[in-house]
Image (tube, rainbow, N blue to C red; front, side):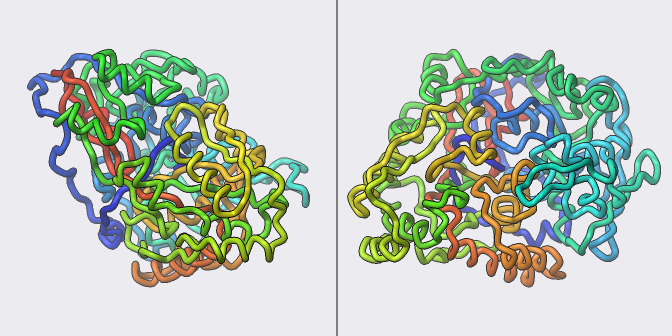
Amino acid sequence: MKLSKRNSGLVATAIAAALLMTACGGGDDEGGEGGGSADGGGSYSLAINNPENPLVPGNTTESEGAQVIKALWTGLIEYAEDGEVQYTGIAESIESDDNTTWTITLKDGWTFHDGTPVTASSFVDAWNYTAYSPNAQGGSYFLSNIVGYKDLQAPTDDAGEITGDPVATEMTGLEVVDDQTFTVTLNDPFAQFPVTVGYNAFFPMAEAFFEDPEAAALDTPIGTGPFQAEGPFEEGVGITLSKYDDYAGENEANAETLEIDVYSEITTSYRDVQGGNLDVVKDIPADVIATAPAEFGDRFIERPSSSFTYLGVPTYDPRFADKRVRQAFSMAIDRGAITDAIFNGTFTPATDAIAPVVDGYREGACEYCELDVERANQLLDEAGFDRSMPVDLWFNAGASHDAWVEAVGNQLRENLGIEYTLQGNLEFAEYLPLLDSKGITGPFRLGWAMDYPSPQNYLEPLYSTAALPPAGSNVTFYSNPEFDQLIAQGNQAETNEEAIDFYQQADDIILEDMPIIPMFFGVEQIVHSEDVSDVVIDVFGQIDTARVKVN
């Protein structure tokens, strides 16, 4: 999942357990003061950045919109704080004899916020809508392994221009058996399929949405989660949510009302928590990392994360088309000096494209992530790079990225003799569309948090040919058939060990071709006011909004 300002953490989750569809309960409460009233109720506020798109699950592939979606929707499965799979969602079971055809059985009693029942068609219709390319849903790619997906993609010419309409509007791999049952047939065996379906792109949609999807996207969202929307999301303002009394899940909301407020500056939201005008902020500025623990005490929470920060490189730009240029830039960066100086040593220099939270991570896997100024200059000369032209360094505004991106620029100047220009004036909602449209002119800051607990999720959505925009998140526009093939082999593997071997081979290709420059693994660091307790942030970087209690 694309992130606005997430970083990453350092724990391992057992993907093998996830592959076996083992359900597990949530972890112990490690956040807050535990002083909520027994009856619940009350109102609290949570800060986010402005989402990229209207609140439609299939078109929400970044962290800010996903935080709202998480409160408004519950999917087939849920994930524990550490990322493991829980069968506390709408699915009663997800079963297959061959890892290719899956039968999904739903629990009784689930309803949308408009009172209509959640049925098998609610999922099938939503998945078809998300997959149909004219709908331009950012999460479309996640459905690409379902039989018939290709028939829902509009034909294009060699330049990528659409030349006609898709041949179908529904995937043949989806079949409604009855109101509580549907089947999913995949193109190839994929043992991890049950692990993936807790992600936004797999959420159900109410019948009312399909009457006029464009209008519904801008209207009051109709979800299945512990909170319901009181009105539309207002860009730059936020949205008010209230407890859904008929919620059928186990994670019922404790608070009566949740105000989700949009902040364009992370420093402003932090000050508002300090001043008692905001209850929860899930990101803190880099310059307070050293002081926040003492100031907030138990109300400062630090937890492992699944995300990592990187510099994407526009491979479509002739200046960066040679992998030796990308390798040289990476080897000219002293990540340790940046993490120590700016992040007070809480972040770890990244030496892999897979985060440490899942099996498959390898410390030191990235040869070009080690500082080597002499070799970096040699590679740059071999590539014939023009050092006389400044390099644009991009990042989204208001999220405390300017200090470390500037530090990277200073190191490029010192170690490679290249001047730089900071391009950090765009808010997150403006920044991501520019990435999707090849509008970036140099290395750009971005982060990724896992959508589900698998090393595959760190690779396929970011670098596969099938994940090129608008269907996916491959905003470096990198494409390598060998990489695609290794990912396919990993997806079809019968064992976790075999799958990880293929994924690591694919990872090696990324770390050689360097469409991205790995930067940091970090931790989730949040603060909250004295007015709330039981504040928990999960390994995906999202606040468990239902769990929060108002004191």
